[in-house]
Image (tube, rainbow over all chains, first blue to last red):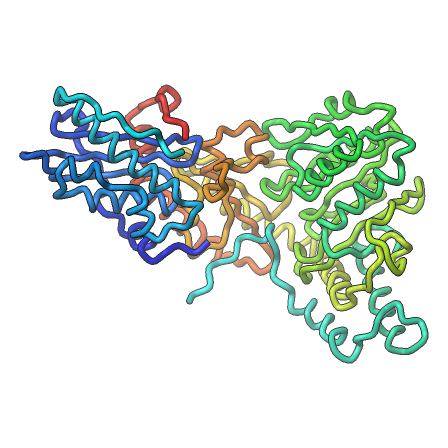
Length: 137
Length: 403
């Protein structure tokens, strides 16, 4: 299967690969997927004043589309407020990366990772976890 | 675009130029129908087919009359299994095969189950070989056919064919083997191995696509199969359809070249394969899949833990290889062959198959090693699982959200 140019670009030059201090109260970590399924994404956000995401990092075990989806997600997250981040929809990722139907689950996983990271941050800071929509899988 | 290094010779092999040369006249001046008995065009085509039949027979140690030309190994598998089931259904309805067979065998058996066959699918041991005691125990008076592949397409393990055929014969059953990956690569002798039916194809041994053969034993015992294609009664009534003369000529030439070059070529290939495999196996957390004693000379199947196979292949775009991962399929199920060895799903997802061939060079192997090492290291830097492994976190203790 041929990958889109954007997938290849993110794959070859992944943005924001790395690890933030998961014990910091300013950092939210989302770890989604399962090794048995061939995809695991870890996405982390660092939240500053006014609920603005100041940094985002990822590491992903998975195919090129999974790596590209999480790389793109970190790019989009930086500078957004948490409320804005919650509006990122997996179909935005599908569109931006021109993912084929068999790779839509990669974008779903990235959306789950964003929400899971935000919830981790919220819980750490004494806020209630947001009830997530039923997973798309 | 620079061509990648081709290391997917289990999928298909390039056509040897010497094979092409033998085929070319049969597209042009020697275009006749081999079944035309009344003029020179037909005779010339028939002569080409007869000669090819000899070349094929010589490679596998049988007589020319025992070769039925088909469109490939899938058709030969279908004809052999369905043909035996229909021909011998008075005697019994039980077939024994193994879970690691190619889909051409497995799906044919599944089809027959709908038509009254009882099929036993033998499991395999962790090294990919079947358990002979289990085979023996599965044999019943109704068993008419045992069909076990010669060499596996994904991991290259070679089943104990002589022992398997002896068990089948002891219980009065026929023995068939899908030898697609073995014929032309290692010595296969239908008499020494006790084979009654055998499927193989040209395009895995540097011949053209679209042509293969089914060997059907004529003596001790005389085996018959019910034809699956009705028509002009070609191939002794077992496979109707105008013969693909250029393809058959190509199959014959390919068999001849394999026979003449097999001894030196298998030593060369296993040397290159061992060099590739032993170097890559020195990488941390890499695992060779399948039995390494009994296997084809040109295949290596290696899992690189904590990286995903499809992602890895993308990082190795300079190499044409294949992976046991199947991130594209709706089920996300990795290779059933690797899973049947007892490999965990994550290791199956992390596997790469290297299939070497006649045109693989030493330089290409060295490049393949370098490309693989670089890609695995790159993806491990991206892998959260690798980071957790390095921190000493037991991944099996994490509650993963299955999806």
